[in-house]
Length: 413
Image (cartoon, rainbow, N blue to C red; front, top):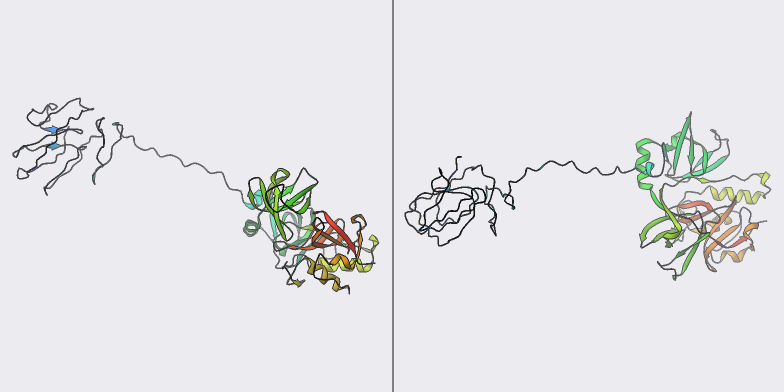
């Protein structure tokens, strides 16, 4: 075996006063240097393998061959020539092994030949589902309107009755195409919409990723309390009915922070199921004369519904540019000559209180906590109200009993 060497010139004067003993794990040979002869492997004159200890105190020392693995202190500027030794083992029992100098490789600490690293296949991460897959859509469509609402009709014609309304970026399942119309299912609404107002494929997915919401659906209790803090001793802000879905903003130790109209609070995770959803259409049954309601009631409901999808603005009074809950009822009633104050807690005093079971389209439902009224909506029949809910949803249609009403008031004949 050929060894590459480091040669020290005779002119170099190195005084080394260190005596040590290194065991040779590979060769089993011990070498003693100083006044003792060197016991080296046959054929390797004056060659010292990895792990040798030296004690040198001679001015005219013969040239030494030092193989890779030995760390030395060079006390002059002698040129050192380094070449590959082909060795890959280092003897055991060396404490405080020196760090490799530049150009050298560190060997295995255990004294065993370093194993070549095997290339490992990267762990496969579970495929992330997109918004459509999370919400169970096979052929996703998204309502592409700037404001207001998009009618879902019972048949593929503008003369057909309205079955429901989609607002901006509401999602639907596209079932089939019929000329310029698409047959869709959105929430509980089935019907037809004009194809020109629906985004599909990648365009729909891009919008859906932005609109995806985490929803807590009330289960296992007829009424769930929305509380100020994460404690059953905390004050109640609202009472929410079974089956209602509330948008989750955050989770905190078994409680969910949710939005109920223009108030936010906590609900217990013991009474909800969590899922991902996209906003969908709202079921709206148009009133007819056959329903037996007065013209003014039907007209008031139809007038209020045309603003579904418009903005919610706290303190606002514009049905088109932004309005809050009491501003909405005030402005709708003003259109029919009935004056109401811009305050939900005061509006009940301007009408006649009735039972919820006796409510007719056009009557007002009031909500809140205890006896404190904080929200109001217009009853549109079929167990629903239209109201200015909050900044996220704007003016929308909801189940009249999504919250427990405090009172119902009539203002119309």
